[in-house]
Length: 274
Image 1: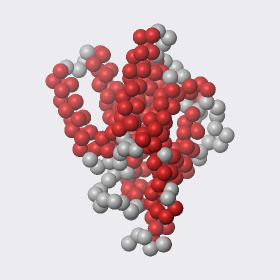
Image 2: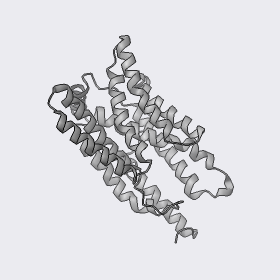
Image 3: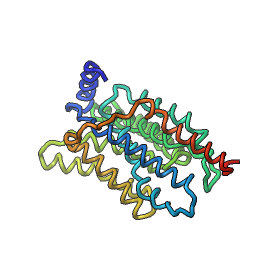
Image 4: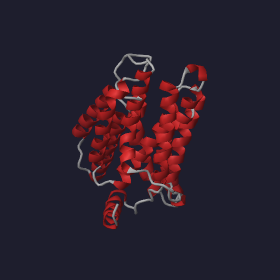
């Protein structure tokens, strides 16, 4: 991003959050960690033979990926983009490209499931709506009839979409809750009331993270990842050094559909794909 672009983003973030934009240096590390843990999860689930007994990798290391992806999307949607809905559309395009190879992966069920990009895109859209709703309520521009109507539509979309997307209803809640918590944690002052309010806003993220998985080890890795992201929003972002090698943008955009395509090709070559 150019210095002028940085200045524009800083001004936008300050207007949105009421405070200077926090450092996003940590997301450079987050990108590498998210892709590595996601790939470990998918390789252990779809490629590695069961005889190798590497299922533990997906239940531990693999549980870092989704909450980390959701945290980065929420962070960028809150602090680093002037148009979060356009950002959501870009994620959706990646999901559309990845859906066919994703559907070729072996599954316990033949039910249609939309990949994680749909979860992230819809979650960011919900987060934008929730923040807009809060702003309109604070400004007194949203009457009770409109509030009830919008809430009913949002609840219906969340329920229906949760039946079709990866990570389901809990996954769709992660980004809206992240955005709410990150904003409060970033704005919290030194007053005890501010800190308690920010802590209260962070608790729903951790609760939903704990509900997303069934095993204790999976819960632990997911909740720990969320807690780390929340601590970054609370000020730990200032302590993060620059990543030695930034991820190339093309690799970041292409890896998700590309690694599914590569796995589908491998499964076809070894005769595990009809």
